Length: 187
Image 1: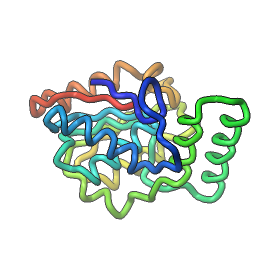
Image 2: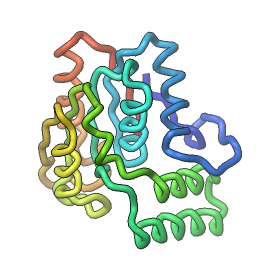
Image 3: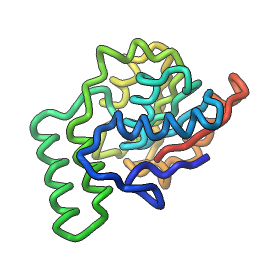
Image 4: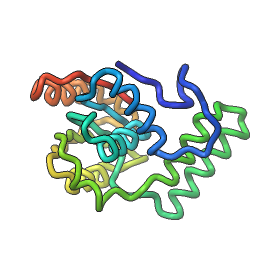
């Protein structure tokens, strides 16, 4: 199953503001409908959503494949950058869902203290040339998680769906095969 997050694709765009937990609750409803036990793949916003899902609804997640996300919330400069992105999207009459998602990323929590609660195995695949979330930030995420592996996709940037697709697919397969799990994707 490949769900479109709220405000993306054909998914509804409820009034904001939104939080990362709102995205996770939406996905939790979908995964619960399918019976749970999903291996979640998330890049950037999808990665933040998958982490929030694993923390808030641990029984629904049997594995995570993450890219383009670190364990820390944004500092004031990062929050300002996300808010500028949201404003620019609105000024260009772009999709309101993307602007609300940018604001949610600006206010996402610092997960470092909570990550030890994640029991599911996690594969982190960082793009070597990811300028948005450098590989060292993604490596830090792996350190905070109890059952995480970390690898770098050579020559890949932040758009791992385009640049590092084969490594992401391999990671999902490894986690899926380790427990005969269903695979769900958020991106």
